[in-house]
Amino acid sequence: MSQSDTRSNLERVLESGSFAVTAELGPPKGADPAVIRRKADLLRGAADAVNITDNQTAVVRMSSIAAALLAQQAGVEPVVQMTCRDRNRLAIQADLLGAWALGLRNLLCLSGDHQTFGNHPGAKNVWDIDSIQLLKILADMGDRGVFANGEEVEGEPPRFFLGAAENPFAEPYPYRPFRVAKKVKAGARFIQTQCIYNMDRFREFMARLGDLGLLDKVYVLAGLSPLKGPGMAKYMRDQVPGMDVPDDIVDRMVAAGKGIDDKAERSKAFRAEGIRICIEQIQEVREIPGVAGVHIMAIEWEEAVRPIVEGAGLLPRPQPLPGAAEAG
Image (tube, rainbow, N blue to C red):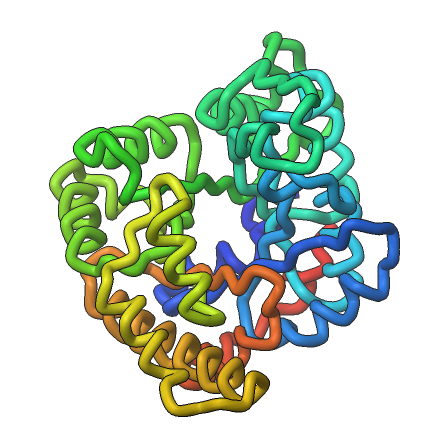
């Protein structure tokens, strides 16, 4: 089978030059497949592919590969997230051979949050390899047909559409573009960024990628997260390392609820403002050279994705080619 036969829908959208949309689907802290199907219903047709998180923030949830298959069966193309925190290279390679056999085609390689952030703080981190090494292993499996130890993969090698994450706002700032360069060299074809609220700093980051000649080698999807209220905005500004939330964003969220005494109506006003801000952010990032799409991380608020995408004028999405969502 040729490589072109196994391209994912996301890969085809990006290669076509269309402004891509990805979103995030968080698996449940349980084994109920109906949760995945309900979220898939909310996201189907609103995004070209949907990230399935892997024990996000080190909290135990349904397996990303199992949830990805359920999402794919529900008509949503998944991006399997794989962290190096929970598995060694043996387990990762074995799991991803299985993912390819199940027809999963997009893969986001992550190191993973430290286990002390999650609900099993006494767990032992693995980190046998890091995200850059994982990218290289998967690129070699696809391009050269070999495992990490150099042995040949039997049969058709898995050729995932490989992605990585990057945070333009984590210190040291000057190092972040070079880290992207390392990931591209290792095999990343697309980059999804951390949540962007400081547009000026993001423009600087993109300009640096351009200076390094990376924008012709990798698709950059700007990460955006709609705010649910001023409390979330303040928490992300003050408590989350590596986040950069300007005060004017926080002030705008606070102002959205002023004069509204009813709690439910105030919450509704906060969320509506969060969606408006996200739509404006999409319009801003579309003007930044090198931005190939957006990655919307609604964080257990999948209902917000379609109004955001619609409000930004990004519907309808390019029609998936036959077989793209159920490749394999």
